[in-house]
Structures are given as structure tokens and as C-alpha cells.
Image (cartoon, rainbow over all chains, first blue to last red; front, side):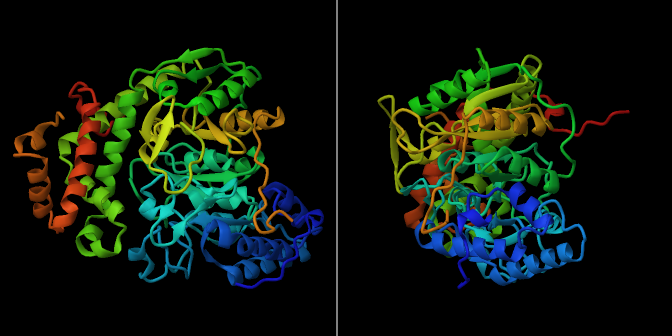
Length: 467
Length: 66
């Protein structure tokens, strides 16, 4: 891909410019959508050798869409609320004409879809411009995006480290300023983990609130579509376009009742994670710990459900395409396919009780806080992490704090926190958890943390992506 | 390691894995059986962390409001 680089940060085209700001400028004709897309494509190209965030760049399609936006503006029409805003999607959403890989070689050889996934259609109708598909763990089964087939995604905050997963490319592209927002999916933490490790804002909305039409599933009863961005405002603007229902309801109360999840969520957190939560808790005047006894069981339930549903979903592939799957992923999928029904049903019953327990907590709290990951991003290839003197299996432990919450389906935002003792430049995210369908409360809380200077997501320049 | 129900009935986890894979038409190479067994064992340990909750069909069944 070769595109002209016209990315002076003072001309409104730089990587640190947000989605809402771009849309405002394009809608008024002060900025050309083609120039914005061209700059984003140049950043994608500059960033790719070091970060490896993209699996496909759709330059021609992007420029064509951008020209259409500019024509509407020129003719005095309404180009949509996200006019000219470049974005990219995890490579499990269908992009017309581009094979949907889902991180796998097996799917790469199928015919390309004829239509876009529903979320991409909605974003296009709102004037946003898709520039490509983003790297991920194979079939979304992982927390580190160390993809055997397409290479690992490197973390823009420290290129030696993993970007997290499975939506690693989505988080990295935002952190590096390639695009102001991306789409990802979250089954056990696949938006929240990479948001935490790459230091971007993330939103896993209420289960079922965003269409999965035209998307490769992983674990049906747990799969959520979500958004990553560098501001809470941008998260809200995108959610407002892609969600089945607009952001409605009362805003977050001025003095919300905020609790900090204790027990499992403290026991499994390292020092940086505990410090990040403490900082957010102080800013939100949270004083009380909330201990939910089923949290550990909920983690187990989420894992069992994921194994079983993913194994069933991919049964034909593990029968017929076994040599083209990453062996580690194949072994997980085979194990999942073999699980006794008793185990799956037990897990779903625990899940039902866990939902009741969390729902009851929201009778006393508006929001709950927990770290998104037990530790900051780890070097690629890390097998073991030592926390408080205990050696932990790095990959499974990465999801310990996100997994329990996914089965509840409630909306969760990630606030990126930096400047943590012992973490160096690496960020760590804090989960802001709200009752079902209260995305507005999550976004209001993230915005307040941003305004207070507690959470932020600056661009890390990679190969000239900032300028 | 305590494992439950069907797995406990099998001669061991390895036997269960090989037999169940065969029943589902999944071919396992000899050199990958141990890796799959390790994954099944990992899930079995997770299952041991699941409390038995009342056998309440309503947790899974559709609920209709009259």
C-alpha cells in the first residue's frame, strides 16, 4: 500500500485528533474526508512494520468512501454524525470483498463476503470510513494476540510487549493514533484486556446491544461487540451509531454510589492493578468494598462455557482442517468439544446465580470498580508472571479479572491509568461496571475521570503516526 | 485431581479423551493426546470450582409472562 503522507499534526489530520473532532470539521467542510483518510492510511503503513496491527488495509475502498462523504458536504447534504472519521475493525467482522480471517488460515481461503457486517454498514451510513481489518488471536481464543499465522501484535506503549487480546490489533491501532476508534469483541475480556494493556478507553456494552450479524462468533452466549477509542466522548459517539438502541436514560448522578469489588478482584490483582483501582476509587469517592462470594466460581463458569461453546462451534474445523490450526488453539477447541454436558450445564447454572448476585449489588451501588488486568502488559512470549512472590501462568491469569464479569452481560468501560508505581510507562485499565443497559453511566464515569486527569489515552508515536 | 461424572467413570482422563474424541470423529495424533488431555484436565479443575446449585430448570428454560 502506498499513499501520500500528509499528516501535519497542526492541520487537523494528526493521529491524536479524535473522532468527534474530525466529524465536526468534515461536516462543516473545513476538513476533507479524503485528506483525513489519506493521512490515516499513511499512519497505518508507517505503523505496520513495528506494531503489526493490520491484517488487511482497504485503501481504495477508504478513499472511495471518503470521496462520497466530501461530495455530500459539497452538495450541502448531511454526511452523517461520524462524517469522514477513519476506523478499523477486528478481522472477524465481514468486510465486503475481503476474506474474514478471524485470525485463522482456515477461514482466509473462503470466499470473501459480499456484504459488510451490520455494524460496519451502520458506521458507513453515518459517514465513517473503514480503512482495514485488524489482527487478533485465532478465533479470538487468547489474551495476547500472539498469532501463529499473522504474527504478534506489538504494544505501542512498549514494542517488546504484547498488546493483549484477543482484540490486540484494535487496541494497538488506537494507541498508536492510526485511527481514533476501532471495533472489537469481548467474550472473556477481549476488549478490556487489550484496552488495559495498550492504555485506551474501551466499552463492552450490554450483551446483545450491538448486532453480531456478519461476525464470526467464538462463544455464542458470551460474545459482545464493543468499541475502543482515546476518549469517552468518542466511545459514546460510536456506540450511539452502532447500538440497536440509542443512549438514553438519566445521566450518572452527580454523586454516584461507587463500590470497589473486593475478594477475588483484590486477591488476584497485583500491586499496579490495586494502585490503579485505588486512584479511580479516590476520584469517584468510592469507600466501600463489595465482596461477591461467587466471583471465583463465575471465573470458572466463564471458562467452561467458553471451552464448550467454542468447541461445538468449530467442531467441523477441528475434524477437517486440523493441520491448519495453531496447535495450541486446536487443543483447546478439541478439549472444549469433549466436555460432558453436565459440566456445561453446571457452569450455566452458576452463571444464573452469579447474575442474581451482581444484580443485587446494584441495588446498593450505581457503579462497581475492579482492575481490568492483574498486571501490566508483559513481554511477548512470557509464560510466567510473578505477583506478590507467586508465580502465575501468564496467559490464563491475564483474564482473571475480566472473565467473571462477562457472563453477567452488564456494560463495562475501561479507564486507562498511567504513572503507576513500578509499571514504568505502561498503563493499566480499571473496569467501571454498571447495571444492564446503563452504558450512559459508564460513559459519564469515564468522561469524569478523563476531565479530572485521572484517566487518559495519549497517542504513542510509532514510525511517524503522531505527526 | 477430583474430576466429576463421566470423566470419573472413565478409566482415566486420557482414556476418556481418546474415546470421546473418537465418538465425535476427531482424529488425534499420538503426539498431541497429552496436550489435549492437559486442556481437559484444566477445565476439570475449573469444574471443581463450580458449586452445585439447586437443580432449578428455570435457570436455563424460557420464561414466559402470561
